Length: 150
Image 1 (cartoon, rainbow, N blue to C red):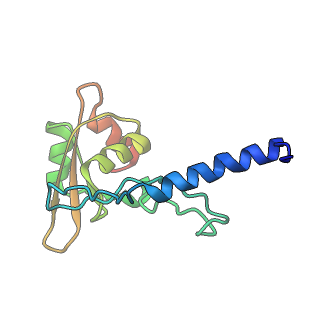
Image 2: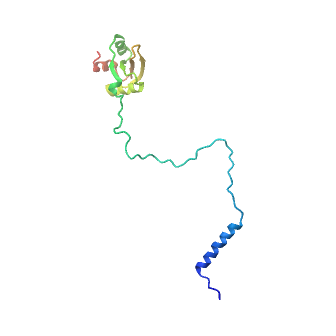
Image 3: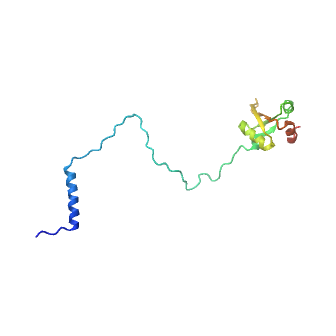
């Protein structure tokens, strides 16, 4: 009498059948994808944000160009006085690295006046001079008196 089939024996036959099918069948090779372009583009992979364990600098950097460094001193020559009286313009010596926007902001903070326009030039001695044209609302003479130029 033949032994009875158990549940474990039935599972073994199925496995053996699959293996036999794989052995009898042809070996499939992976098809190489045809490249239509000569340029290679690096694949886009996951880019995680940096999460450093400690700060790389011990202290945060501060801004070196503050309003007091930008505007060094007012110019008090006769030609500068003429500009103050006639064309509502203040004349300052400013830092060589200061931009027109920096100068405009510094004048607004220091003297509470609004600038219409700023013209700059670099003098032959290497210093930068700024002509700060004020808006119609403000009088350059009043501002000059407040500063102490006149």
